[in-house]
Image (cartoon, rainbow, N blue to C red; front, side, top):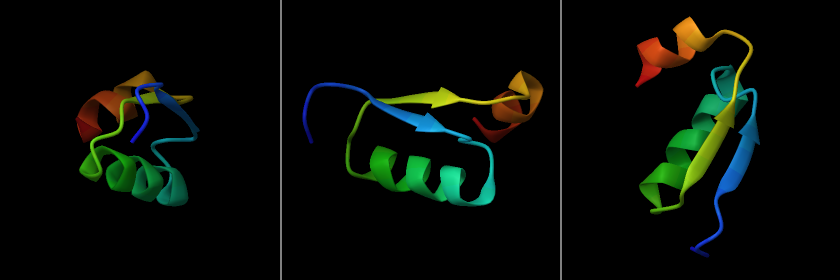
Length: 44
């Protein structure tokens, strides 16, 4: 993957979390935009 980070909107939702996991699995740098930081922290 390219060196530039990928911005994922809605990263804690159904599709957003699947996209985030797929990108991380391919070695991408991911920046996640979420509405609820506590929910995002629980997914780490």
